[in-house]
Amino acid sequence: MDDLSTIITETTEPLLAAPAVDLEQARTEVARTKAALVVQEQAIAAGELAEAEQKHAPLLEQCRTLQEKFDALNSQVDAQRHVYFKAIDRRNGANAALDMERRNRPNPDWQGGRAYRVSANTEWEARIAACVAEQRAADAAFAPVSAEMIRLQGERRAASKELETASWEADSARQSVLGFRKKLEKMKPRSAAIPPWQEQPVPENLIVVVGNY
Image 1 (cartoon, helix red, strand yellow):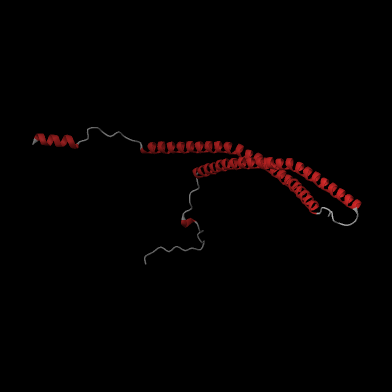
Image 2 (cartoon, rainbow, N blue to C red):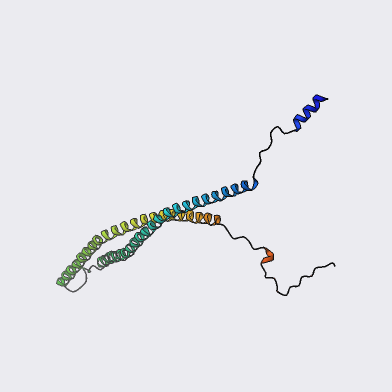
């Protein structure tokens, strides 16, 4: 029995005394650590925001430059389009005039004398020659106009793709900036909420009755 009492006493009594803890000091240290952590997190978020803004700024400027380039090319294409259709109209007119003259060849059986028929045929051949010359000139003038139109349209397509890519990158960087701003805004301390009983002023003529009912 003595041995059993000794075992029970030894197992129920604490082997080591718990160290004394200053609760107020511990709470203060925890609060100070949490506050320092919040400050560090805010500093990190502010740094991330600054990096995102630095990345977004040149992309936005690049978009402006590419937009100006595209607008200039677009204006050149519009101006060249007028020249292009004018050259087409000239070429179509030359082809139509030559076709009409070929259909209106003088009739060899037409009465009026041999000299008149020779003169009429000579004038017709001269008109045919003039139409052929105009047709060749119109074709020659159309070639460089068409080549310039194709070149400008190709450059405008390339500028459009560059602008589209840069716009996508700038918008992605902008979304990052907005995300970091919201993150930093949520970290800022907010004022304590007003208790419901303090939202409305207490009337001055309020009478408080204390007693048994």
